[in-house]
Image: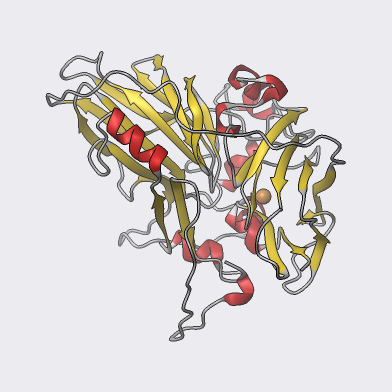
Length: 404
Ligand code: CU
């Protein structure tokens, strides 16, 4: 998945690899140099679902069937012209901030609708958008219904975690169980994205939106960034669920889902990885992407990284290639995250388990742990980049090297 391995038109590149990932909801997409945003927006992306014993045990326990009661949901905002063709024409501002669509699709469907029965459903939510983050909630009228988070980017959590809201940034996955068994025939529930201020913690923009936009959670810069059509942080429906059929299913969610051992970080000196902007250019460690140079070497041990976002910045979903990581803590987080904190260190449900992408807010520092010990003996050149695809294409990406 390195941009140096792009495939020219008419050419091919045979891949062969052993899938040794934990079971989970993965995805794959184009990573062509400076073309990722346009090509992923155009559709070069898909799910890659991996099963393992823990996943199969959960499916048996709740009688879940992929495509029926276990549903992958890719959430993407798109723009279309009058002929119904996709439009990808980012302005200079949008290349810097990210390209937002004016319609939000779930599994490529506008106003997505699903008839359900009164039982458990598993929704494998993937944010496949270029730049838009979502705040996921199940709403019955004005009431937020509780759901259970069972997995993140790298598969199942150790146990289910109750939640009513969770952020999902581009590239992230959130696996949830929704219990419809107490709902009545004909009842409607919406999976929604709730309003939030994506610039809340920003030293210059933060809080401006609340006053100017009547507390709708957006702000003037984001208005421009969204072309004034569907601004970042607005509330909207993603998926309409209607209880319209009879169904029965097991009621007991397993108390244990999988084994998850916290990485041992005793004595590890954190590596600081600073996100910043200089003259309209997003930077990691003060650098923009150089395809053949490494920003730093990773050691074949457990490393701890402090990903530190600038005070005046925007949200960056930071994505690591090659290794899953664990999120250890958040500091200087925006107030919007506080009610979502589940654990010590200010972690939200979306931070638990194994991750490959983590949302970093303006002004925030997110601490992660990565285990670089491995059997492969050779040198590796791997990527760390922002999963806002316009940021990635604008070179908010570095190589890190693992020496032989
Ligand atoms: Cu970014």
